[in-house]
Amino acid sequence: MKKTLLITGGAGFIGSHVVRLFVNKYPDYKIVNLDALTYAGNLENLKDIENAPNYVFEKADITDGPHINSIFEKYNFDGVIHLAAESHVDRSIEDPNAFIQTNVMGTANLLNAARALWKNNMDGKRFYHVSTDEVYGSLGEEGFFLETTPYDPQSPYSASKAASDHLVRAYGNTYHLPFVITNCSNNYGPNHFPEKLVPLFINNIKNNKPLPVYGDGKYTRDWLYVKDHARAIDMVFHDGRNGETYNIGGFNEWQNIELVKLLCKEMDVRLGRELGTSEQLIAYIKDRPGHDRRYAIDANKLNKELGWYPSVTFEEGLRLTIDWYMANEDWLNHVTSGDYKKYYEKQYKM
Ligand code: NAD
Ligand code: TYD
Image (cartoon, rainbow, N blue to C red; front, side):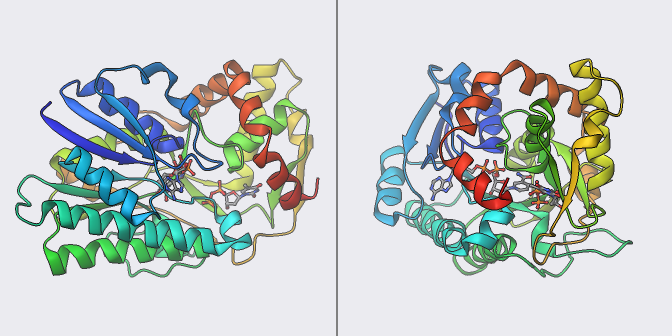
């Protein structure tokens, strides 16, 4: 094997797309997927590659420092792509501690393990930290997040991600740990856990359930198809400059309510319903506390340096996503039973 890479959080939404891309594209890399399989981790996401000769799964919790150290010693990793995290803002409002433990302490454990393993030779090594645009805070109607935008996180989730970004940079500065960070906008696509806007609403439209739009619905996000994020991670991991940050975004801003209306239209077509039927499910509900008004990413650095640009348009990506959810009812049924359901009832009281 040419390289042994650790991918954390590989059983989750984005991680599973990254693992699949690397396992298929780089048969001469050994890919170790480390995941604690929390409510958001699902090995069903990786059924198609689970028997690949260059793929290994390790069930481990990144908050368990000694276990993480032993896994680093066992595999002697050349690189780390770190995606494991608690990722849902609403859950972070409900219970910030899990976010502080996993996103901050867990990242520190990985940094310590990498530092210990690579202390005598850092050549060719790389710690890639996957982060979010939410660390920059909230924008007004104008402007974009640049890599130089000061951090101003507003939720326990984004604060924990910001803390982990700072730790990665501090280890780079203090211990010369080779690193790269990307801050990406909202992803959507197959395998997305149905607590986030797009998959939740697809599922609810399908089942004729209310579509809970927070506040006035005029909050704005920049949406990127998950496979384009995975492509960007591949490019940055291999060709990004050491110690740099790259923003990743879809060049694709939508107000929530406009996105929901588009989704309703596409679902009406897909379900053979009269146009306008699904829109009637829209229900404005109490706002999320401290809700960030607008995120918008300027991803031109990544475009100029590495030539990355989203390959899938939003309309195409939404259609692919809807098709996937309609064709994968079993996946949806499995994740909507159990813990997710209890959480859902508590969150929405529906
Ligand atoms: P996800 O919640 O779908 O998956 C997270 C994965 O991490 C799950 O498989 C879970 O089991 C695992 N995990 C959680 N805690 C763990 C722990 N303590 N130890 C080991 N594994 C653990 O998240 P996602 O949406 O795929 O996000 C992946 C990464 O990308 C996160 O770091 C997130 O901050 C970042 N990100 C997400 C988005 C987005 O729109 N989803 C956008 C930008 C950045
Ligand atoms: P989400 O998918 O939770 O991503 P994030 O909060 O990380 O951007 O939410 C996207 C947007 O949709 C956000 O403005 C909150 C809003 N939203 C709703 O209006 N209703 C919902 O039920 C959910 C989950 C989100």
